[in-house]
Amino acid sequence: MQAAVFFERLWSRYVEMAPQAQKIHDQVESSFGPVFNDHVAFRTFDRPGYSLVDIEFAFLNMGYRKAESYDFAEKHLQAYSYLPPHDGLPRVFLSQLLSGKFSHQLQQVVEQLLSDPAHAQGDPAERLLQGRPWPMPTQAQYQQLLQESAYAAWLSVWGLCANHFTVAVHQLQPLASLQQVVESLQASGIEMNPTGGVIKGSAEQLLEQASTLAELRPVQFSRADHSEQGSRHSEVGSCYYEFARRHCDAQGQLYQGFVAASANHIFESTTVQTRDTHGKEKPQ
Ligand code: NI
Image (cartoon, rainbow, N blue to C red; front, side, top):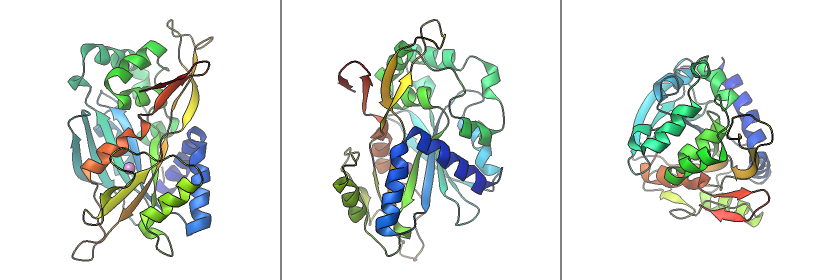
């Protein structure tokens, strides 16, 4: 699949899951000029057919180059960045859950969800556009995952889709600071992820980042017998939108990497609350 077509289709899927992103995109464009994408991030499980090396073919086939690895020991995640074949395409940040580092119970839920080998096949780019290939978890399975990993719980519901797109603040014309962009969104009532400070990283680290909190979307968990009917309605956090401003190094080269400490906080943009449609908010 052509990379430009892939990212266009991916954006359409993303704004279906997070309609707020389209509004934010349009607001940034009307206030600051044309928006370019800095990077798109994806999540997956480290299981056969789903692991980072299975999924990365989508990007290697488009001419992307595997760049740097990042470890998030505390969250039991591993990630790689991928650099595009030309400037018109976004960078890619692909992470996977190291399921073996979690309890037997969590691993069992992951195995149950991924048990059908037919779901683990197909063109990886198409799979990233299709989202969740496995059945929707039951509420109990979701809660089991959530106890140990907000990342795993999110992934079980939303699947292999784009977790977030990212506005390249350094490409806005005329140039704006990340603070200006964030303030303009906050003035419209957009909630930003406060973990580690709204602005993560610094000019000295060559990368400043901020992100919205994932917006709550209605979902229907599977029933315990896995039939889709009559299942329980809830709202869970879906995708979020990120804003990144890259800086040039001493040689005048624009920084291409990621800052692990900032990314660690950005992951928490989906650690919001789950809400029963008929119940009260339960902070997680
Ligand atoms: Ni990101």
